[in-house]
Image (cartoon, rainbow, N blue to C red; front, side, top):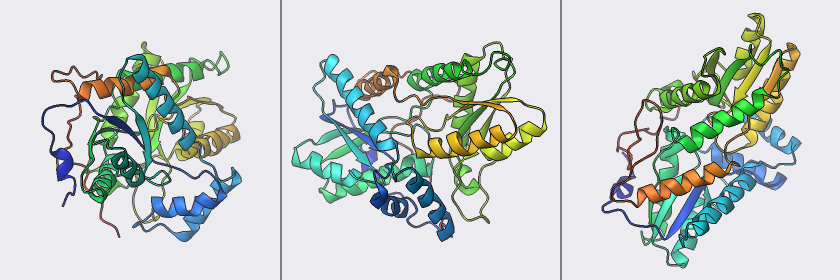
Amino acid sequence: MSILKPLEDISKPKKPQAILLVGFGGPEGPEDVWPFLESVTAGRNIPTDRLTEVADRYLSRGGISPVNERMRSVLDAVQKVLNQELLDIPVFLGNRNSTPFIEETIEELDRQGLTEVAAWIASPYRSYSSCRQYLEQIETGMEKVDRRVLVTRLRPHFDHPGCIDTAADRLAEALLDLPKDKQEETHLLFSAHSLPLSAAESCSYVEEIHEAARLIAERVDPSNKLSWEVVWQSRSGPPQVPWLIPDVCDRIDELASEGVSSIAISPVGFIVHNFEIEWDLDVEAAECAAGHGMAFVRAETVDSDPRFAEMIVDLIKESSSEDPIPLSLGNLGVAPVPCPGDCCPSPSRS
């Protein structure tokens, strides 16, 4: 049963009094690592040795994820664009798994008397973990303040030009870092967070990832000279549970055996830079490619591009317009807002 029904109670569009940027969160020191991982994996059957392995990775980098600092930079950039457009709207940050938690930020909004809030979620794709789980936590936050704060989400936006065109530019820049003799024979990998198959089959996540990858590849390589495909990373579940494949490193091994000598990875599933990019791609995938003597580059994420903040402000203005003209690319159409009550159902926990 969905607990999101109140979020679906939207009538005439209203200009928001505040913007809530909703992030995944991450540790900002060694003491934060285990509380963060326990929050991320709550209710899931993650083996202890797997959690310890992930904790050690964070600790090897000082226990710090780059995602919170990146989200603070996004906040500053969005506030700057709002100010330039003379939109007197303050911007706040709330995380799912680390301070400031979503519920804490909604309590702060309540203290400041800000009752109409638009929420932007830092994942543009639709699945339980990348969409509905955030909405459930927003709902919990609203209930804690007796619904004095009404939070409505901005639409999912993986196909907005602010994501697609910017990601294409980042990938094109990365290709230029390859040796010139490799640039026209590079195999493109579009990487996203893996999901259990049972979760992937009940949402549009895989379809949206593939559509984003296609749109980016067409812009980077309009003559269709480069081969490309989608791969998956960051699986964390029990080994007996099937997840989306191929894993990025497994696929690099296969490509090397097929004679591919150059790889470029676009982290299409992540629009804000984070630890999983730094570890799974910059460490593990890069080392895997190096072990085969393959040239390797990884495209930057889109969050630091000025067009990214402009996209978020565009979504804000679209949400409060009585006659919006949504910007979207591709063939899947504009995602509905509010979400249908039966989309992205909560996965069963074994």
